[in-house]
Image (cartoon, rainbow, N blue to C red):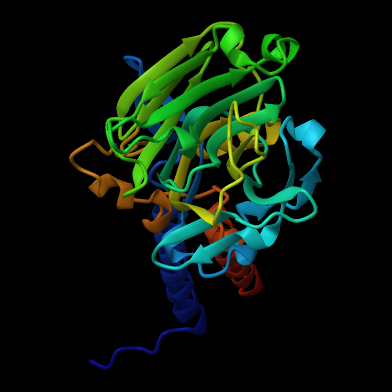
Length: 364
């Protein structure tokens, strides 16, 4: 028996059903891993952070095109810098060296009694409680201060600072300064040592010969500092900030013999391999974004564990959620389109034409 021909409406309905099935699959695929955040254990308690900022600087060809970071250009007088020289922050002193990392240079030649120095700031200024990590190779040239810190203002600051003049290869002594700048520190002439919010401790390795991960865990009333996942120190109390801020990488000198020393006799380079930051936002909009995308915080893969390096295994340092498929929807990741960051909008762009087609064919 000859099969009767299909009607036009029957063919259209079939095509429409297939299109709707495809869209349904796309919506299913758009349900992201890590949509409720990224977790780690801090001082024995599990914390989940809603936002991330990750940059692998070994793959950044031109820092000018990275939307997560901005190079800083400004001058500080010697009086304001509290040193023998002023500081000249210049964007040319922050440069990508592909496959090596980002280089922050303190120049060995002064300009008009100012030391040419370097600073890189995160564009996100809503970085609140979180865990902040940076892989750094420090300069062995005496006379500079390398710093990785969180900053809101001069009285709300969390610092890890490394003074190259204090490194002593002969006796394997490599100090690190852990600092909370607070209102009390400002009243003491920005001498946090007089407030109890300062720890000088020592690294178990030479920080100038290889990259190591330095980490600050910032949670309510508590900051913990690490090197290669080894606890260096902890500061508690009211001096711990309670607002959002931004991240800073800085390499500077002003000739102050009590701190940076120097200036250096030759160019000194701080190299940054990566920064990984997982945090809660201080803005209402980002909190609404999280509430919208996080449908079930205990659902499968809704929260992703942050890989941790150790002193003997740095492999997890090469893992970035932003390199994985579907793990950073609705995150602000440099180099990804709005559709990739938001994750759902591209699916809606397909749904609308399909629904319109169905209405045009009289199928709805």
